[in-house]
Length: 95
Image (cartoon, rainbow, N blue to C red; front, side, top):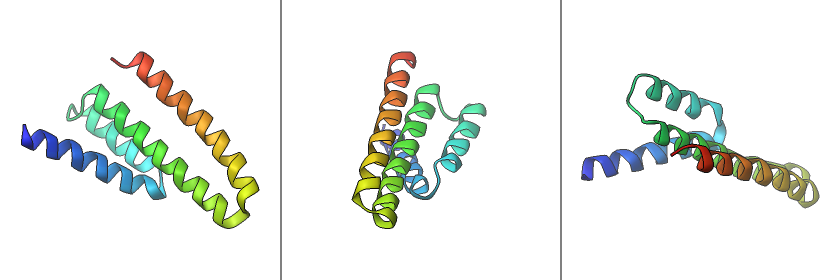
C-alpha cells in the first residue's frame, strides 16, 4: 500500500511541477504512460486535470504581473470557467 501511495504522490507532484511551465508536456507524458498500461484511465484524467489547473493558475499569475489586475481578473474568470467545465465533464464521464 505504501508504495502505491508514494507512487501516486510522486506522480501528482511531478505533474504539478511540470505544469507550472507547460500543461501539454505532462499531459503527453501521462498519455504515454496510459497507452502502455502503466496508468489506469482515472489516474490519467486526474493528472491531466491537475496539469491544466496548475497551468491556469500560472497563467493568471503571469497576467497579473505583466498586465495588472484588470486583465488578470478577466483572464482568471475565463480560465476558471474552462477549468470548471473540464472538471465537471471529467467527473461526470470518468468512473
